[in-house]
Picture 1 (cartoon, rainbow, N blue to C red):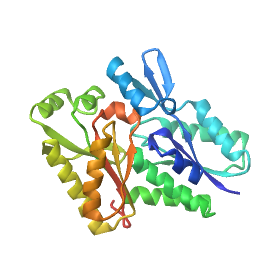
Picture 2 (picture 1 turned 180 degrees about the vertical axis):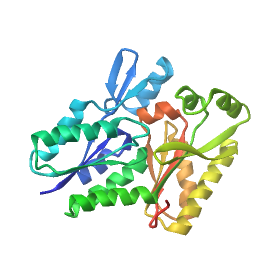
Picture 3 (picture 1 turned 30 degrees about the horizontal axis):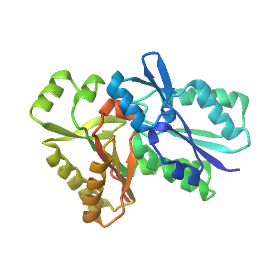
Picture 4 (picture 1 turned 135 degrees about the vertical axis):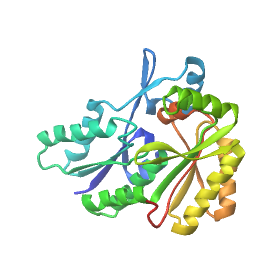
Length: 285
């Protein structure tokens, strides 16, 4: 009896990692007016071109049908299932998954299913999923797999800097006046995710200063807590991501993975966003 891992598309794990660790993904959705699609059915370049032409789309959680199909696929063979989803403060995916879990248990009474709120998204969610999947691959119990996911959440941090505040304003993540003044005076917030919500870690004048301050925070955390893994994430600005990764590598002497942030998160923060996500050996929170 194995433990299978299920997550959602906002983890933005590479196909290589998903295949290596047998991680299954259920997709969130996107809608440009009457045109709807799954996030996993459009590549980033095409999506950001569409957004430039058609404006900011809306996003939606996975359907009940998709979640039920994926859960049943996991338990009908007698396997147990660990489901790790994006923050319940950011999406209804977690809450819907809990309801679907009860639906599945009505059909498969002996099934063992854990549904976990990662309290984040992108690779902060992804690292939690990876740790759970590695634990499952080692043959550990569902309880141990779930524990690995939860422990990683307490050790991880996601810092990111938007190119400007327009997308956050349009998405309701920041007030209109604050966004206008921020853009006017080139005030750049360094954002993070705490308690499942996006929050401001600090505000800095100019993007260059913000990038340096973000790297300083990463170095401080790692010097105090040790380093597990680290990645640079970006929204449609790969060259800048490479330059940021080079700076971090010079300071920490570690290899840095560079990963894309996809449409559902990208539409709320906007192209040009750069982020660093990492987990430490000791708890950050």
